[in-house]
Length: 298
Image 1 (cartoon, helix red, strand yellow):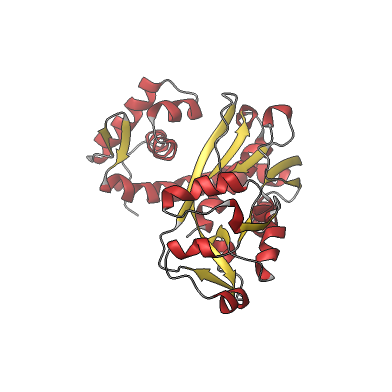
Image 2 (cartoon, rainbow, N blue to C red; image 1 turned 45 degrees about the vertical axis):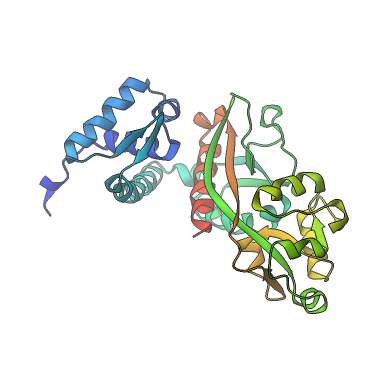
């Protein structure tokens, strides 16, 4: 084995990885508990060690170069391996115990999180995980949950939030409904169909307008704040519903409406209290959820 090719400092590699994940030197410095100048020197040192340019500065933003994008995937694998070595060597994953409360929307709680919990059980079998299925933005400061998965970023400075990815959604309806009413061929024709609301119909109408979809309250004859109930309504031929691609494509009785239409994108944020840095069990669950949710969309 040629050890001479490994010529960079892991701390420098970690600085690059966290900066790429957080999107800025200031955010990465906060995540690592370093000053911004110190972190900047570590990233620059890695560029010198590897003789590459990892970031370009465009305005106030840092953008990964093509080389940076390629190295990022390798650095992620290094981090995962290093994390597993650390856990295994210290026995932390097996020894970590206690309760962690995760709050997420009802659709994600029912159809996504059970698979993530299988991975958490493998790594830390002594943990007790409670899922709080709610579409409300619960206040982590009041300890209603330890970790929240939401489509909006909480504003409180005491919270740590990480953008996992931009998920994609489309319109779906039952094949029976479409056979009865006809399949719309343009966005304009959508206004002639019934829709299933997901709580606040006015907000949905406003959200769809920038996508050149103009609906009115008359389109929403049925609605529910509970996503599972609304999905069942759509499955029972009551109208068209916006839904994540993972959910919509999983049911053969449902059909994507306007399949050529561009995706409606929405963010997935993972949020925790700053106690994240001092609680091994919350940190472990946060990291495992982050990895699972990031890869789930691929």
